[in-house]
Length: 337
Ligand SMILES: NC(=O)c1ccc[n+]([C@@H]2O[C@H](COP(=O)([O-])OP(=O)(O)OC[C@H]3O[C@@H](n4cnc5c(N)ncnc54)[C@H](OP(=O)(O)O)[C@@H]3O)[C@@H](O)[C@H]2O)c1
Image (cartoon, rainbow, N blue to C red; front, side, top):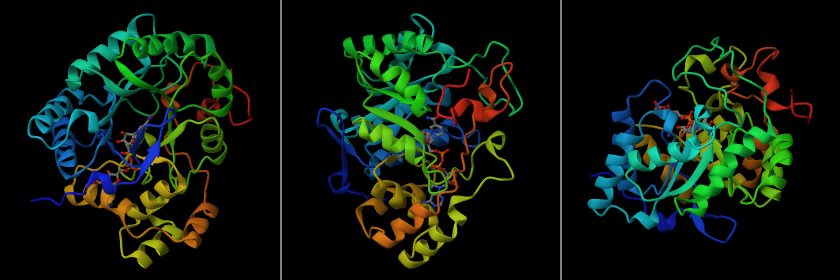
């Protein structure tokens, strides 16, 4: 029988309002490489071995099977609903009036839940690309970020919260300029912001801005997503698990470099959401946050090794007239139009 890691021993993060949630969760994006069944089997195994936080999304096309395993895991007494923290996200093609609410209803139905613990706007614009499309594909209807358009979606998010269908709201793939534009307009502010975070891409400015605003950062691709879809790979990308500072710490702690990325993430303050369908890996990912932390020196070395290497560049969301994926990320401190 698989090892059980006592969820009480997993350190906690505090959300605005004081609720404590696990400092690590499990991602559920199969990267176009793993089937929905493989991912949902892993989610079942993960609940059984002590994971309590799960990062889902409608665009991952596996919520229906994940819903079945949540239901089975609850029936089998592996966890109580109140102990799970389940995130889902609205996809870019469902931002229009009424659509966010319908999309949330579909996720609730698929996940077999009465409420979501958190619901995120997956990307801050309605630019759609079909799941699994190539990196060169563009949608001629894509357009740059508009705070007004974003707030149209956010008002629906707030209504979902009012209706008790969603406990916390979240944003994802934001930048500091976009947050500055929308946070003052929110009646209900996000409790969490999901962003790409790994040793080679630490986003200190965004991380600090989010934290200083009392919002909990959630880190995606925490291991540098070695199996990400090919459309998200370029020759210049750094492989986190091959970074000298990460490899050295792995040797010192006698663990896989992936585990060092996760220890770093948790000690840095974000909630990493690593993905694997392999039991030995998802177990070691959870176990590693309960034991043998990195030293101050190791943390400092990894901090200094940041390569500003964004992996999920988002080029498929570019609008006609945009020059490159850099336009999505407001790198000069203003919102690119
Ligand atoms: N909000 C967003 O826009 C967004 C974007 C991207 C991702 N996400 C979320 O973030 C989650 C994580 O990102 P990700 O899946 O792209 O990347 P990741 O977690 O950084 O990397 C996942 C890969 O790392 C390998 N791995 C995991 N644990 C390991 C271990 N202990 N030892 C060795 N290798 C290990 C796995 O390989 P094997 O497959 O061989 O096990 C897996 O394919 C996603 O599943 C999704 O929920 C959100």
